[in-house]
Length: 389
Ligand code: RFL
Ligand code: PHB
Image (cartoon, rainbow, N blue to C red):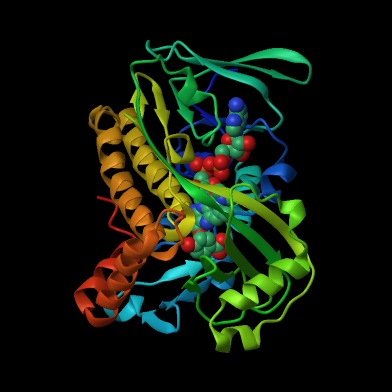
């Protein structure tokens, strides 16, 4: 098989890139190691920035998002007994949209099916080759047979544990990493959310986040120990702990019910530089990870592939400028999102080695935010997303 652009991974980065390339008339094939149902079963992001919404619209995949997505003009922070609403719209003129990654992925899958561009699910042993020359190709196993896909470009949209980044020769890549000493335990339930807007909470017992997927479906998170196992957390234990960590008025509104999904995610900051090696490009979680506190992961994946789709369209139009500048342009945005996610994580969580000084720093930061429109604007500007650049 031969195509113009071979994409590894059918997560949001891979599928959105495929849709944007299709829009530009560029042929592409997606190889995914899992089944479509498995991909849809992963419960992850919930908040989209305007840049991501615009790209989904540009790709022609926003019909459901535009009717079912919930625009949020602000969010709340709770810090001990204190509360602060960050008025995104007043501070930046922008807002975010609450719409689950599962739904984004479902819409992209359906769009791809209609476009007729091929996706190979359950592709095993995918490996990129020859990307330092002009004839890269992917080898993989599918339907019990060895297969080859030749392309002009290979794009690694295969997430943090993918093969594309690891196929790059040692020495060509510099990585930066920070592991946080806790995880997030998430629970999804068909119960009405406790609040109209998201609440990020700092409490003595640890961080909590009250989020949602719709007016009928809630998503909650609790900071947990890295040693915790999800099996140790019954639904009752989760709801009891959440009630302790929510502000009193929200706790009083909490409606509990059976969980649809419950999982623990570790928190990590990670960047691999550069994001291009010859004819191999990395995008999304394959190149960088942020802790989820700023809701930036999916949005960064979308902005990477927005830049890349533009660069590849320029290439087929006769200019190398886009592909030559992709890594630099993407990384400039990535590092700002890394900084913001690290900052927001550091402000809102209990750190085992925080001590009295660390807590006072968090309290002073929150106090400063409460009293400074400039500080709130900086937070809001980053939360709604910086311009594509
Ligand atoms: P994905 O979604 O991991 O998709 C990668 C795909 O590649 C496939 N793959 C392979 N395919 C073929 N061969 C191989 N060898 C392969 N290896 C892997 C995988 O099966 C998979 O289908 O990466 P992508 O597309 O870059 O998308 C990134 C986002 O998924 C991620 O950044 C976000 O989910 C992060 N995130 C959030 N981001 C936001 O913008 N807003 C949020 O509110 C938000 N909340 C979250 C989050 C992530 C979380 N977890 C669980 C890490 C909340 C949580 C709890
Ligand atoms: C979510 O709804 O899953 C979510 C929302 C905001 C975040 C992280 C996750 O910062």
